[in-house]
Image 1 (cartoon, rainbow, N blue to C red):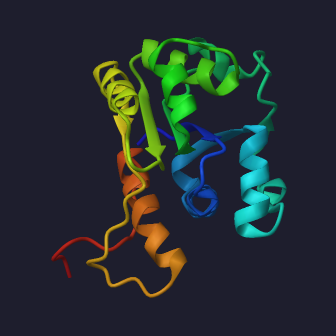
Image 2: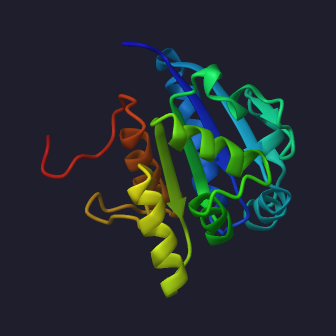
Length: 188
């Protein structure tokens, strides 16, 4: 199996726990991954500090890119990053992606991933959806993106907030094509 080159984009939507758990999980799956590149919006850092009470995003062993660094390798299709995960994905970010507005590295990378017909996974975390949101979700889906709402499952009987959030992150990891051990419905 070829190792994955993954972009993780973290926006300012509520749900920093999803980003944290994804970064934690990717460290345990490093044998399947060539590289992980991370870009965070300024709001993402503020929300992380507020929701998680720390700045632990600085402690991960991944290369972090400034949000306006258009010289990042994944700002071009020639770098061959195969998967981009936006977690959590704000509706503002999704709207810019849907309409081709590449005004920062996150929206540019998503534009590149879609134009190259690679995998874009947007973990949206807003509720309820307006008609504008629904139309943007439709546009990104029609362009080849995968919309994965941060809607946890409960059939694994999670006991903590981390276990609840992990149900979403496990689904994202599956969608990214990585092998993992996780709860599977009606499997031993």
